[in-house]
Length: 248
Ligand SMILES: [Zn+2]
Ligand SMILES: [Zn+2]
Image (cartoon, rainbow, N blue to C red; front, side):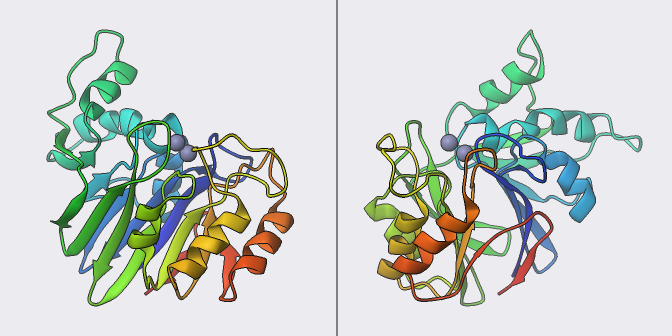
C-alpha cells in the first residue's frame, strides 16, 4: 500500500501545510483518512479531485473533518452529473456535523455521503482490513490500524498516551503518530502527545519506523520534537511533509 500525506499541520493550517489528511491506496482503491481544513486543495495537488473511494474521519474536530463539507460541492455539482455516494466511516453525528457546517439550514448531505458509525473493532474498507479503537482525546476519537498484504500502517489520530494506541501500533511497518506538544513544559492532560511520548509509544509498540505528524507550526519546535522522539525510540524518525509518499 501507499501513503500520501496531503496535510499534516496540527490544529490549524500552517503556512506550508493543510490540516490532517492522508490518502492510503492499494489495488486501485483510495481511502482518505481525515479531511482537515485546507486538505481539499492538497487532494487536487497530490492526487486528484475525485481520487477518493472512501473516507474515514477519526474524529469530528475541524482540523480532521472540515473539508468534507466543501467536498459536498465537488461531488454534488460535478459537471458530468453527481458523483456516486461515498462511504464515510466516522463517529456518530458526522452527518449532522457536516450538514450543519455546509449550510445554515442543515441541508442533508446523504446524497453525497453514506455514513457508517465507527466503533471499536476490525472491519474491511475496500482491500484494507481496518482496526479502529478509542484513543485518549476529549471527544470520541479513533486511532486506526490499516493492514494490506501483511503490511501495517498505524495512525494515532489525536491522542494522549493510552493503551489502545499501543495495541493499534503493535509491530507496525509505519507508525504515523501525532506529536503536538513540546516536551518539558506543562501540557494539559488527555489531549495530545509530545515528541518524547510518540517515541515511547513507538518503542513500546515495537514499530519499524516512526513518522511524526500534527506538529503545530506556529507553536512547535520541530528540532526539539524530533530530538525528544529520537531519545525515546532507536528506530528511524522523520516529520512528514505535504506530498510525501511512503510505499509499504
Ligand atoms: Zn487535530
Ligand atoms: Zn482533535
